[in-house]
Image (tube, rainbow, N blue to C red; front, side):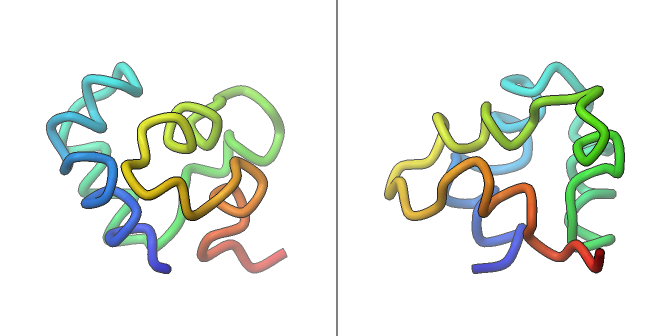
Length: 72
């Protein structure tokens, strides 16, 4: 699953932006980059936890979401 597919499963960019407390432009930037912000890795944000709860299918855990598109 890609980040774009995950965001669509969560209701789309506007709903995700509202749920994460950011702008739709921020969500589009994440999609374009293919991963969550690097602040997710150092614990400053918890977007992965919120996205895990927002999924309709519940296909991914927060840890799996955190790793989407990341090259460590």
